[in-house]
Image (cartoon, rainbow, N blue to C red; front, side, top):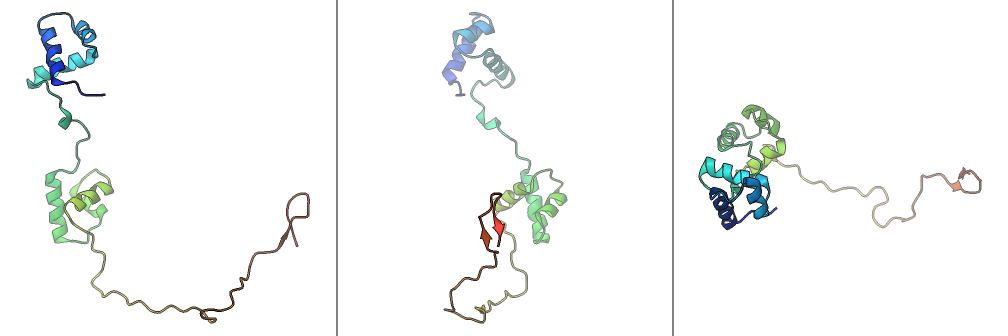
Length: 155
């Protein structure tokens, strides 16, 4: 549903303020819902503004700036903490991917190598035949015959 323009919001409230009808009559006149008229009146009463409030909609973040700084301090002390350990240490009730995405935004990466040197790749063996051996395939499957009524019969 599209947001009502500020002009339409002002006209709705002006009609109601000038007592040109009840809330229901004003809603029918401007072809909006009764709930919209009620919400506009309530918003004006609470905030003094009638503009759209999109920046207040949506899901609120569970991991706040204070949690982010706490995560940063924990990882500075012990950089090899797992996501589960970080969640337990901060006391957050969020998913593990949520913590992962926060760490990505903080540009923190997981340490992938240990302190030991990386292993060296060794040449692989091609078996006793070597390259270019006879390319005949040897099947380990049994031979089947389809000569019976009920299905396949093993030979």
